[in-house]
Image (cartoon, rainbow, N blue to C red):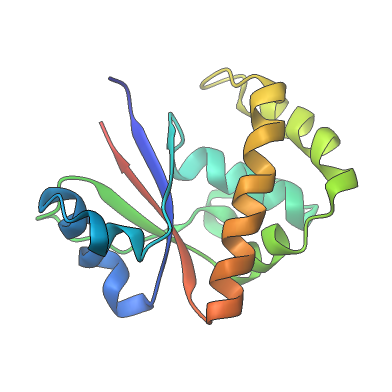
Length: 146
């Protein structure tokens, strides 16, 4: 099956347990409220590398890794993307996407190979999700599970 990687929108208090509970309870109506986008193979490391690229900074674990907000009792790991990263995603221009996808794919070659063409289709989706999160005054999160 591979690693599941869901990006979703939540208010801070609901992120750590709410999304995973909606998955475990198979509560489709509750899950829809999180506006999740489902992908595979992304971890905080790949997301952190994208954060560094958007910030035009060298990648740093301390500066760019999302914060883990789930507890040990959870099946998966929920990480909060910083608001400045959410906003950088939301402000991404269409003209930036092809170049950003190529750079992001090159950054990830060491761990996992992602096709730049796939990332080109994914980035607008993440941008739309980030815009929705910002407009709602909520955070953007990554949930992963193997």
